[in-house]
Structures are given as structure tokens and as C-alpha cells.
Image (cartoon, rainbow, N blue to C red; front, side):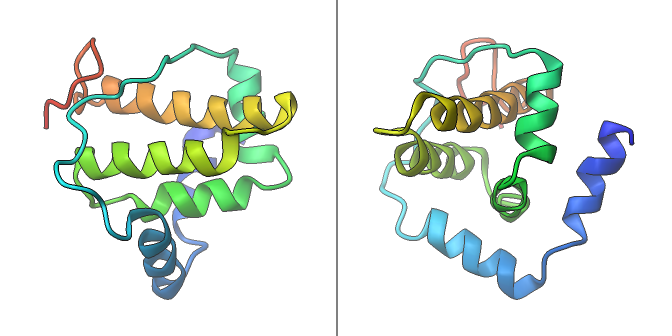
Length: 126
């Protein structure tokens, strides 16, 4: 199945209540000021690893719910939520688990850059 089709299919799987709940979980009480750039390292991963991490891993639906819940929020809010996701899922995680989540985060950050929301230094453009 093509990646774009997989990507779009996930957006139809969640109810509004699920999306709102996820957004509150990851966005609830963001600090002021919100981040103006992504300040963590970003790696480029093999496409096969991205595909597995984003679509095929056992917990892919959890990531897709998180990703879909970020639709419509500002770029600084997305960076805030991604940092919280990293803290919750990557700190003190086993290497395999850490890598799975890091692949997802890096792929999302790179997509924001490709989409013009972040510049080449990962600073917020829009």
C-alpha cells in the first residue's frame, strides 16, 4: 500500500472525542512562551525503518492518534507536544523502544521542515 494512502487512512480512524482527549493529554497546559525552534538532534532514518515505526509497529495506532491530534494546532504547539512525547516515551527507554519513538519524532520534524513550517535550522517559520 502506498505511503500517502496509509497516511490518510489513519486520519479517518479516530473519533473527535479521541482526538480531543489526545490533544488535551499532550497539549494540556503548554508553557509560555512556546518553543520557537526544535532544539534536539534530528536524524534521517532509512525509509524502511520509518515505514515500520510509523505504520507497522505494534503501537503505531498510538503514534497515529498523537500525530492526527496535532492537525490544526500551531507549529510552536506541535514542537511542545513533540518534546513532551519524547520525554514520556524516550527518557530511560530501552534502546529499541527509544529508537522507534525517535524515528517517529524525527520523521515528523523533517516533514514540518519539508512543508515550510520550520527553516533549515528548525526554527518556526509559520
